[in-house]
Length: 416
Image 1 (cartoon, rainbow, N blue to C red):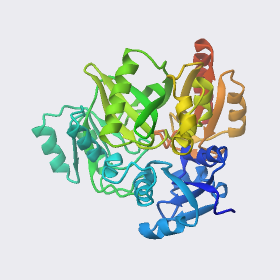
Image 2 (tube, rainbow, N blue to C red):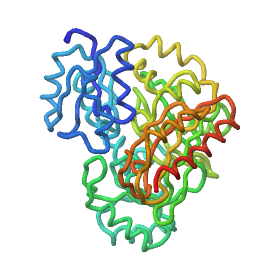
Image 3 (tube, helix red, strand yellow):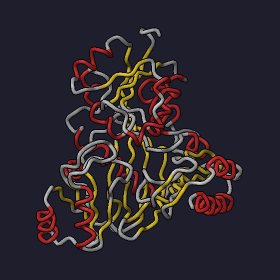
Image 4 (tube, helix red, strand yellow):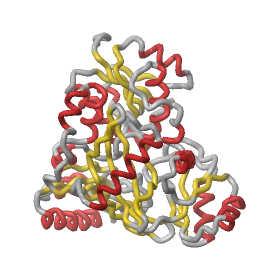
């Protein structure tokens, strides 16, 4: 190990962020990893590849200790890998006087209530929202603000649609509230309060971007398709890449730019979720990190580049970033990002045979199977409990739609 080598620091390089070391290696950079907690959370264990880093440090509440450790390296950037690393990456990058979104609005980039407050301060539309640890206060808010059902409840600081519930009546609302309040979420944090939002009617879209020195570039606009589960709400089904230009796209991008400006996301990636309502786009939430759970190669095959590589360029190769972002992205191939769900509780069958079958589909690009042969699974209720993420890419819309239908039938056979 050569300590003089240019080095990138990744905080919590889990899920999609596990691809960062190889992306930086292509640019001649070593990677140091920092865990924001003593143990790697169970939900991320499989995606953490410690051997791809020259060192791993564990943050135990002492920022000075971490920054002292990093002075042994030629650190040129600090990036949050996934949601739980955002605030620590902001603090370290600011402390080392590197490119940083800073700590002033760091919590607003993680805490959903503070995020909504930051948007209100910027005169941007938000759903009615409220945070509380009290069931009676939640009901007071509903009455005083004349909030109709359905009402959305979620943890203030989690990820992966963890415990998000769409409640159609008081009974469902109460069950959802007590399922969240005081419980530990998938990021290992206790939900001291519950976040409530009025329900937005419209179509859901995702905007993924990368910013460099305050200049934002959009790498993907996707239309979300979800499945409604009684008593739960909507779970992920698929996301479909859209052309870059169009009335809807222009409105979404305009709102996304205003949102990330309101949250001071001037450097690096952002993953925004929006509802396109009759009155225009409204932010559901945004994250200051790359899109989770996705192999970046699918975006490459569809539009020619991906959020991961552009994020690397935005920190360490500004000339290449400028070159790659001179023009809007062009939809060269159709792209589906699919979550295969367990529609019932059961036992997982032959995963090797399943992967072999789906890899023969004409549009197959990649798959991330989350379960193993013989394991017991519950019915999917969120992103974390889905069976498999599959990326399909193809020139022909008819082919990709047919392969999607085949995938659904294969997934039904996987769990018995």
